[in-house]
Structure formats: structure tokens, C-alpha cells
Length: 193
Image 1 (cartoon, rainbow, N blue to C red):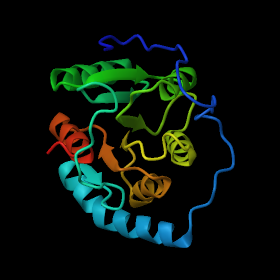
Image 2: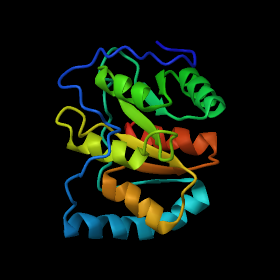
Image 3: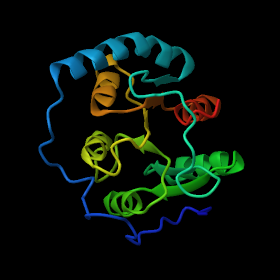
């Protein structure tokens, strides 16, 4: 269990050492996927503004997701603001989660190559990485393609929500967020409601 703001950079992961932050051409989404994401973004943006979060019904299955390791779910918080990261660590550890943290490219890659992540809370704007790029790379990775990801961002325009959903986000939470909204989104995506 990690309970401090010191990310563990040791690459203990499985499989090939993919750079999840590297800007590379990604597979294009199909017109059907884009249209589905567009409809979801149009329907979800008002809800996002009203309650502070939106979940993609296309990706969210609703069944309870068992923790991949042990009896506690493990969250990876990808956030460059140390104060916000500490708040998230405190909130989710108090709620019974194991929490890990990554703030930059090296830490993101190291954490994603470690086993045992149940859900990622992913900022879009990072100092040396693009959260949408990270998400798209996750969706193309054979071991991590189904890993639930909730975007945490101040970008709330319909085109921003569309970009997140089209990249494969399970949920979208606006900053500044209500802690209760973020907890609700995490619980809903993991089927813990």
C-alpha cells in the first residue's frame, strides 16, 4: 500500500515496456465509434455541468469488478498537482482503496507496467504528457485495454468530453470537482454502488 506522495518508479510490470506517453500515430476510431461518442458527449455534457461527472454507458458494464490483487481495489492517480494528488490519496485510502500516484512520463510508465491497478484517475493536461494520448495507448494495449479510466480535467466543453469518450474513457470528472462526485464515479465504474 502506498500512502505518501512518493511515486514508486521501479518498473516491475509485465509484458513489453510500452511507452504509454509517447506521441505516436494511433489507430483511427471508426465512424460508428465516433458517432457513439458524439451522442454520449452531447447527452452527458449537461449532466457533467450539473453534477460534476459523467459516465460512458457504452464502456461501463455495471457489474462489480473484483480487485485484481487482494481484497482492496487499487487506484492509480495520474495528477501533476501534488496537493490535489495528496487529497485524492487521502480520500480514497480512507474509503478503503490502495492508492498509487504518478505525476510525469517516467512515473506514468513505471506505474502502468506494474501489476495490480483496478482503475486510473487520469488528468488530461500534464507537464510532459498528454492524458488523451495515454488513454489511447492503454486502449490499444492487450493487457490494459479494459482497464477502467476516469478523466479528471478542467476541460468541460462538449468537444473535450467527446475527445475523452472517443479515446475510450469510462468517465469524465470536471475540476474543480466535488469529492463526492469523484467517489460516486469511481464506485459506479467499479460496480461498488
